[in-house]
Length: 253
Ligand SMILES: [Zn+2]
Figure 1 (cartoon, rainbow, N blue to C red):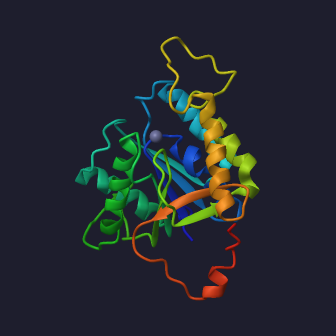
Figure 2 (tube, helix red, strand yellow; figure 1 turned 90 degrees about the horizontal axis):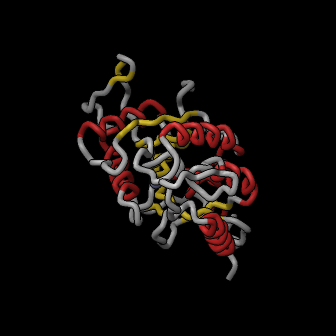
């Protein structure tokens, strides 16, 4: 296996999106021995708090806590994740570089327009990534086509009825440490905000409580303490062995 090959690649509009909304799943996958990476599309330079440099440091610390195998930032402009042919090719390049079987992508709807824009851009790159005649290079070398097998949207601020919920109970502490690594973004009593840095949706102290409450809500639905919800929109999920596939189904009724 190539050193850069990953099992799962998670995309984010901003550095912290994956940690805020799918960090438990990433931590769990790593703990299960899978190779996982994160691609942040922007540096989050429009964020009301912190700085690009601070977020870079926080993203790197969070990557260390999660134990992921790769983290890339494509440096697209924050607030303008336009779905252009050039940007799609950049995403194709990352998909072909890491050859993931599963993509985790942002929510299809959200209060922040960058999130659905990022979801659309990445999902629109999945098909061309598998086309032989869409030619790309990385570091001057031609890349082979690769189309991920599955795309799952993680839930952000607008809820959906999930297709599946991942039991993230075993990694809950790691998941929360990775989230709290973004101390300029989420509530941290030791962070000294300047007067120009307003309170935001995610820096309000209740945000972290909401993340925990939400995880408990979805966890309860599957008989776990904490769960992370995902939406699968690209057709039915195939099953070989119905009994084994539903073995984990101990949902509370
Ligand atoms: Zn974001």
